[in-house]
Length: 463
Image (tube, rainbow, N blue to C red; front, side, top):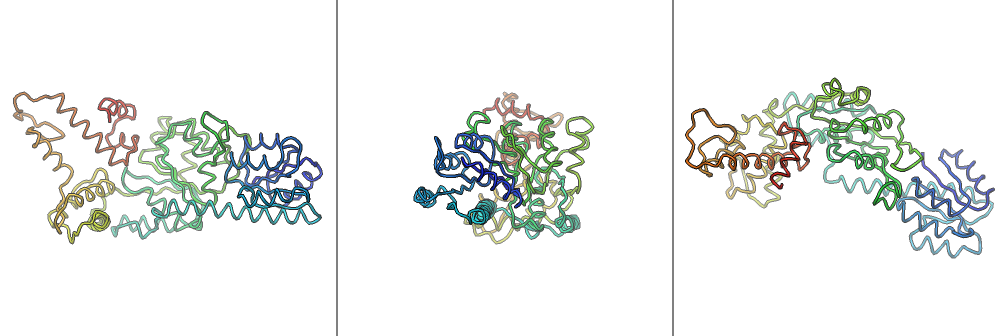
């Protein structure tokens, strides 16, 4: 339901437009001065602002400038009389106003038409922004690579649930491609032409996450110099993907639960609620049932999210897909690196297919990218992560495994144990960060340590 703010010092015009536009299905607020209009714009988000130009003290042009400053994507329609007609035309030409309506017997019908035009323009602008942002990453079932039984089952599940409006909760280990599955659900759904908006819940502290999801109004906190729409509003009529939902703290879970129940959001610092039509897809690599039992995740929110569960299998459970994935990543990175690689050596392919891949597809992709960058010939030879670690230890003059020291191993004289352990820890932190695409909470999960411990080690090694 679009929000409309009407500002006119003639109360009869405000009352007439209020009644008319409410019948059209709009949420309407009216004010009788420019001062009050500016305060309203500072405290709430409006899709359309209708203001008379000629008013005492603060006129409509100043209201227009203020709206453009604090809510740049709001449409502003000017109501003009004969003596301020030229000012309205100039405001439209300058790009500040969306339209102007002359006061006449036909004014109401013209305003209804102008609102529809303005909302269509705003909608197209938001869609174009979303499409440009996601053009390189929008995915469908064709981008989910795999012919294994597990992957065919996953694709069939996506086809089945995509046509529904139900909330989806995607489970899977880190690096299995949960966002790829979420995008496929969106791309196969009736919402495919509308925005797909993704956010990692573990990458933001609570206060910042709230403003990212729900938006904020000017003055809500230090640095809030204008109104900003949250991602739920940006995703209106489309899909929002809440990755790493298990990282969300309890107080934020309460706010999200209310949004899912009421289907409306309230911007930080605002007083008015905004209705939304958004499909929610969440994902986690954690055991939410265990978190519910441990009181670290709300049971009511869990049931709200877990309407349709989808499990993404780890790579070790679909080894027959490894050659396909290798071929895909080799083509991708050989082209971008300018390498003329015609094939992967049979020994490398056999090792890749038998490896456990604890970091799943993301780890495989990083391994292929690294190998392609280092390859100078036409046949790609790939060294597995564990073999690289052993080679590095050997080059350092340490005749031990990079992960454990065998009982009875002969150590070199003068070995600096603290330095050796520090080197391993630093290397593990860097590898986990790369595997987690720089997301520290996810990297901590890869290493199976707490986020606090991870931050301590990052600070210790100045990473």
